[in-house]
Image (cartoon, rainbow, N blue to C red):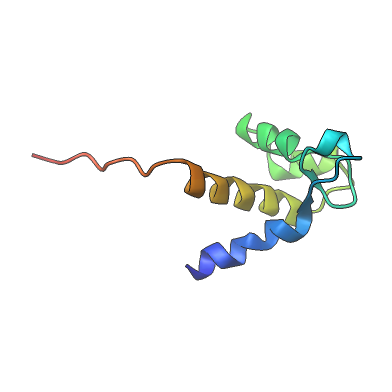
Length: 86
């Protein structure tokens, strides 16, 4: 559980403001959306490539995106059953 609390650092790096990007979650101090970074990671882009494309981001922002996704999955997705070996 300590890891889950530690990963909550996304709450300090990801913000929502109705005046910025229509209220989509963005990284604090930028107009880069969380969705953009998660989609880039899902497409196989490396964190280094993402940071190069979006120089306003910091490595901690990439970690915050991953932590947010993990926390979201933990809350929204049921835990799949483990197949039984017979």
